[in-house]
Image 1 (cartoon, rainbow, N blue to C red):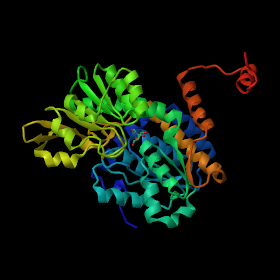
Image 2: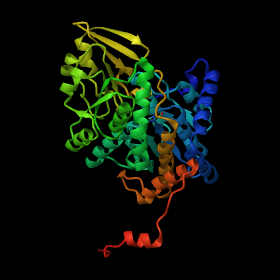
Image 3: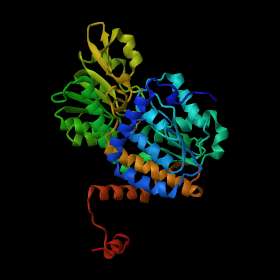
Image 4: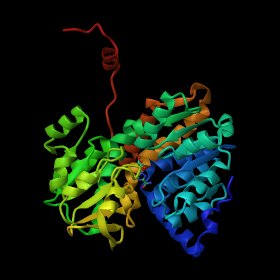
Length: 427
Ligand code: RBV
């Protein structure tokens, strides 16, 4: 195993970084009532005593609150990033000061350092893994299978990670239980829709200083993330064009009032292209060839595979940094196609990006936290494979949030419950 150093051994102005990181975390924590409630419970009950939790996530302020909450619940936590550009070094440094936390996350790492940090986390011999994108599960299964016996289970944050896990499970290759956190209502109806919608558009606007109003915004993929992006872009007076491969989703977008067309047609008219499919090769050479001068290309999917930047590079006669976070590719005929944040997930990887809003991450991380608790408390109930999060846990998080928001809601009467549970009430 490697001896990749924690962030504290990598930063020059360590004390300043720690102070600033803590300040960012304090702000986030003030807006995370779910994590506050769950944290109080964990601190009293110490459910993670003796556990070693390995995490690969976007290490910024909200994530740091999750990491700290698990550590304050008794765990030893080792954490690194899940994207080379999404780490906030100051937050990583602040986390590393906690006596139960080692943080290896650093912004701007190359491929080799990225995986060395993953290995450094795995070297802590985890009993639980918490992933965003499945890199830990993959590395453990591929390179450290001897650790699997000691792993109670894991939790996965994102659509792409759950997709990979389900493929692995279908192949019979997943050897410990993992909760599909992404698939819960409390995650995807809020984080994927509102979180991705708001933070992607905000990051693009801040990075470019350009308006949405009057633009043709091409949203590739009309899943939960695409729905959020489309809705928020329309809300900012853009003309939204949706591309899809799934007939019912294409129809849904059409009935929502968006233009639906193949990417080959959208390429000719789009001003901004934002991919949210989770698949590769969504915007490719033939599309670049017909795009207008000055267009923006950005990706909100987990991996940087949706826009074929190699093909774009081949077409380009020149390439330069037009602004912080914007790379202009100039083509032979003078057209400039502008790629934001290297085609990596734009809401976290652009220099100004802050990730999803705090409120939605409070929900997502609330579920992560109770999933880790559940996996350890009822480990005998979960065999190897992907598991849906028990609905009761999801409701528990919703109820904490509603209470914090001061929102009261109804409950069923006994008669109503009996009615809903029976099949013999006809006309
Ligand atoms: N995401 N994390 C943040 N910590 O600021 N923002 C978004 C953050 C997660 C989100 O839950 C999504 O599923 C995943 O990042 C994609 O990698």
